[in-house]
Amino acid sequence: MIRALLRKELREHWLAIGVLVLLSGAGCAMIAAVQHHFGNAANAFAPLTVSLTLFAPLLALALGRILVAKEYTGGTQLFLEALPVSRLAMVSVKFCLGLAVLFGVGAAVFSLSALAVWAQGMMTPGLLEIVAARVAMFLFFAHCVCFAAGFLGRYAIPAVLGLLIAWMLLGSMTDFELRRTPPLRLVDRSLAYESDDFPARDLAFTGALCVGCLALTTALALAREGSVAGALAQRMSYREKVFVGAMAVAFLFAFFFYEEKKQQAPFDLPGAIGLEAPGVSLRFDPAKQDEAARAFAARMRDELAAVRGYLGIEEMPRVFISVRGDLDAGKYEVGELKQRDALLVRVNYRGPGWDERDFTRWLVGEVVAKHHPSPEAERWVLDGFGSYWMDRAQATASPHTQLRALYGTREALTADDFSRWLTYREKVGDDIASAVGGSVLRVLARRQGAERCQAFLRRMLGAPLPADARALARSWRWPVARALRADAGITFDELLSAWHAELAAARGERAEDLARIPDLRGELRIEPISTESRAVHYALTLVPAPPAGTPWHFLHSQLPPLDAEVPIEKITTETHFYADEQTHELPGSFSPGTRLRWTFAVEEPLLGCRIISGWNRDTFP
Image 1 (cartoon, rainbow, N blue to C red):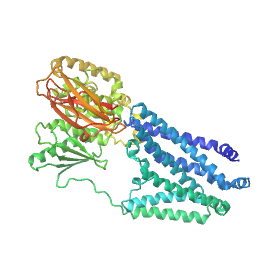
Image 2 (cartoon, rainbow, N blue to C red):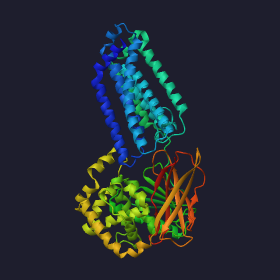
Image 3 (cartoon, rainbow, N blue to C red):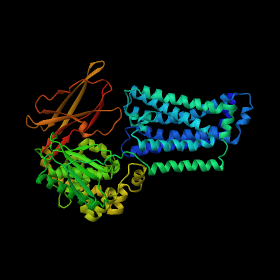
Image 4 (cartoon, helix red, strand yellow):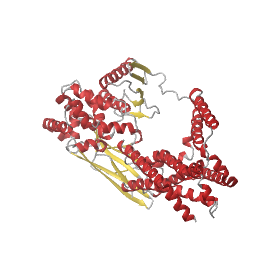
């Protein structure tokens, strides 16, 4: 009889279930595509967070309406109750069918994500176990809640909306954050990389909620031989509709007009020098406020105001500059702020070796990136804009900028290299990549005219770009190649051909300088100390060899199981001096499975910046 009930459910609902499965799969694929488009493709588990919180509840709610509410609303459960099968068995078949559909979709999405992680060599047993447990428990919770809601009949949707409104009010009027509590904490951002801390307490708490939902489902299904569920399934009366509507309006009125949420105060630097211009706000907090500090702040404000006018930006992100005396003069840090319209940077502008021109180039790029976070295929325009901006009024690029561009193009770049710009940037470093991107823009301005180049840059960087699906739609509508044709009247291939020709001519003029720049040949060896411990040895050879005592650096940072952008403050630097014996050991020991991101670096006076051997990622065996 159980098998007959299952066949009956499948025969009756196969089309609706199939459509739901296809829509859910398409939605998850779209989310994964958006993540990939914004450079998160390596973090293959990251899309699960959005997919689970969005599509799992929607799919579970739809299944509850189809399998339960539709049955009781149509009164067909009366026929089933006349069969020689218990009411509990009938409900159990519906519950198990809905759970199987939900788990099937979840298992497919999870498996594809896990395969992508495994293919990249980033999978660990702990990561797989923890992610699987969190995904399975959240899916089970979503199904239990939505299946119970199906028995509420005409009150299901008002109940769900009421819970959502109550959630908003709770977060609005108190400091309570539901997102940080289970079950939602099971699918927060840590889902993609947590491989050590098994969330036993969160799983147990969510399991207890599931038991409560199952108890409610059983009570509604069996109370008075199912008559309670049947009564709830009837259509709302006019009075009930008026009452529910009035309550919804009252809750919304309370939320929008009596909100008492403690608004987060905008970030500020107390006592800082504050300068304003139309669409530009800058705060500078020097260690010592004097005329030199005020003049520096005024120059930065004026530069940002000029960028705003050039790109046609309505409102630039607010900029905060603070001074850290322990930073190297050539190292600029970006602070973490919750506000999307603000940028905090830390510098040592009075330190030895400070280069205000180089900092201005970097700051312009960071501010524009905050306003318009370009996807990878367009990133070369954003990275190159700072270098182009600093030399825009000159007939030729500065000697440092020109030599950087020549150094970064020792191997000819193709259109595919520009579409994979982040990979190229990790190979040569940020300063070199900026000069290369800027050299392309300079060729565009010389060949097609400064005004047409400005029109192209306004389209690519001027409009604010939200970090959601609208950005993906915008990049599909206006890729770089199409924008070049529309605004500058040149194809991307024609631009690259002209660029390669100019580089070839300049390369002959600067051949002697290029030959003096050393080639970095680094080696890293991972050696076992024991079954559970590894040592790291590294060595650097420079060709041609520099004078003995020349400083060089080994930069490294440990990575989570899945790739993510590493902030500069998280990178550790080991400094040594060049000699015949270059082998060194990294302090400490490391366990198998540790992921290390590393490169070698040398300060090159001819380029006025640091050159690197290229970032590498190694997983310890």
